[in-house]
Amino acid sequence: MNDNYYRIYDQLYDTYPDEFLALRLGAFRGTYLANRFIEELREFIYEQEYFVGIMRQTIMIYEMDNKFFLRPDAKMFLVTNFNQMIIKPLLVARTENKIDLNQKSISEMIQSDLKTILRFTYEIKKEKQASGHDVMKAIDQLWGKLESTKLEIWG
Image (tube, rainbow, N blue to C red; front, side, top):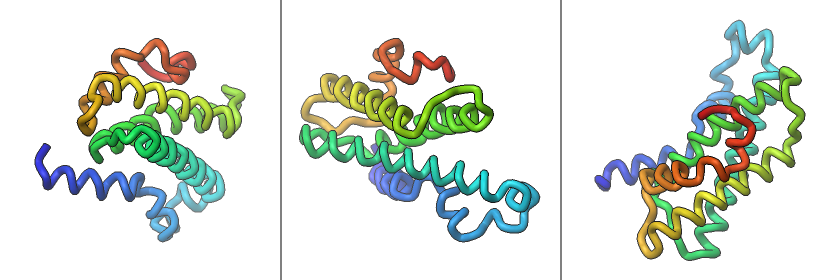
């Protein structure tokens, strides 16, 4: 991986997702959506921020416990895809009363899936830092074993 992109992914991961920061800076203020649904939007974003925190914590604990580290692109790949493809759809479905999942059950599912992916990635890489591509290969191999795939959110 090019050193410049390594650094860029590291920075992107540290600030992901940007809309959390934008909300806190008031970037949504004044738009029709914000005026009409500001509390719902704020809650939606804060919940995403909470789950991204759970993901970061799970990754960090796994790395420290196993002395196995992900490259920044691998962390960004995991956090971005979990947030965009799992967290956001679950939060919308929950808001629309289409699913009955509380914050705790979503957190447990995310942690379980991340640990499963990290363990499998570790088995593939052992002593080297894992890349986003390594994580993608692990997810492909584990697809039917992940808790989130049982919800048929995508795939």
